[in-house]
Length: 296
Image (cartoon, rainbow, N blue to C red; front, top):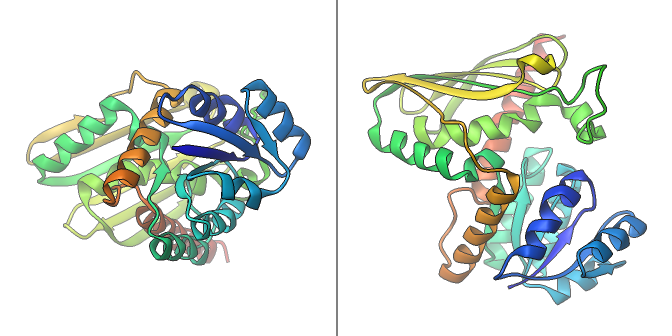
């Protein structure tokens, strides 16, 4: 499959470009970025071509991987789908529900495959754990914590980007937590509570359609010593915790690319497709509205 990369930021440099270049079943055709000089530098590093015109790249590939802010991603994903390209998207799919809906409509109309790269979801151990817990059922409650230190006074994280500064932990690490909870506890009927914590920290309470409830604590401003991700479930089977995956982002993205190839070949929707990304976006938007209402 011929694939192109849209984006030249830290995530594209550290993960996307190396994985696409090394993948045995992908022909890494080229890179487009909003900064042409950055696209050329990254393309030269990986022996591929820099494109000045995004539509020219879309015309030369069968699929695109996107490493761009969510509002930009949504617009370009619609264009890519319209050009017949399969989509390897980043999370969140869009910064608004309307944006995510547009991506789903475009992918459905063009009949292209889509996979949203929720990093944690594509680790081998977490993926197996999710399948096991979903099969077990009988869960009463879950508690997820995703705590990062992207924004703190002592560091200079490459991920302290403008969109993360604007949207905060809810939209950056919230999708990771939801991508793990929803397959096990089921869809969310409503966000019953949302409250601010220190910095950009937020606390959510979710009511799941199958009867379980869950709580989420999300932050990008945690003290460095307090960072980490965890997920605990309690139910009729007892207590279980999400295993800490031994893989890295490169391994996870390689698996996501493999699964996009399979979805494109078989024509079957992937569990983490654009429609699932839309559902995650809807839950985030509901939580955001509650948070905004609570600060008035």
